[in-house]
Image 1 (cartoon, rainbow, N blue to C red):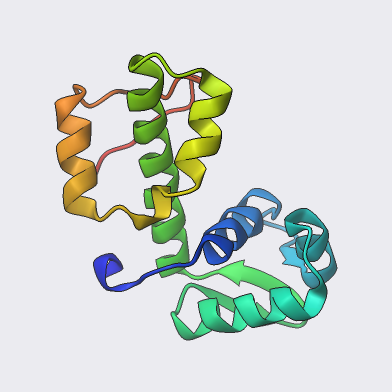
Image 2: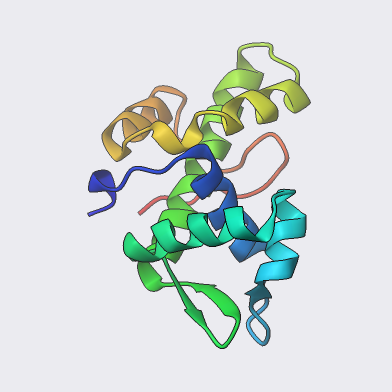
Amino acid sequence: MLKQLTLTKRERDCILAINEDSSIDFPIRLSQLSKKMKLKPPTVIEILKRLELKGLLKRESGMIKLTDLGMTFYNNLVNCHRILETIFVDSGIDLDKACKEVSSFDFMLDDESLSKLSSFVGRPKACPHGKPITYR
C-alpha cells in the first residue's frame, strides 16, 4: 500500500510539519504550516490538495490532520530517516551533515530496501540523536 505512493520533497516536509506541529487537541492550521515550511499559503494549499488526493491527510474546519494512512507513512518516513542517519554517522559523516543529507532522499526509499539496509547495520534501536527506531 505505501510502496505505491510517491512523494515530492515538499510533500515529505509537509507531512513531517503537520505531525510535529500538531497536538491531539489542536491540529495545525494553514497559516502555521505556511510559516513552518517557509512557503506562501497558496503553495501549501496545492501541496495539501495533492496529499489529500493520496489519502494521507484530511482538512476539516481549517484544521489539517494526517489520516491513519498518513500516520503510517509518517512513522515509516521517520524510521527511514533515523536508519539512514545511523548509517551515515557510522560511516564517519558528521551528525548534522548526515541529518541534512538524509532529509533530501529519505522519502524515496522503498520498504524492502530500507529493511535490507536496517538488517545490514544490525537493526539499530535508536538513531544517533537517541530517538527510537521501531520495527513492524
